Length: 99
Image (cartoon, rainbow, N blue to C red; front, side, top):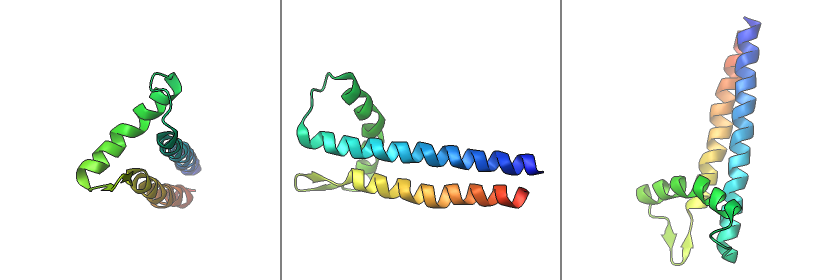
């Protein structure tokens, strides 16, 4: 059974790393929105392509505009923190119980 426990632990670590990287991409998108970069830059397009669909869905559910400020990145980061603390914790606990 220890193989299944190690497998769940490894999955939890990978999910934690992916969520951490995605959180930094969301932060980069928020910073890029302040400086108005070239929209044809491939890096900017990649970051926008990763963050904008999720931020748009959040904006459709919750009104995220406060004047000129869009708080959807803050809500998205909070959701990522929740997923990292809850989802990753649950998977790690499952792995620990199977050891």
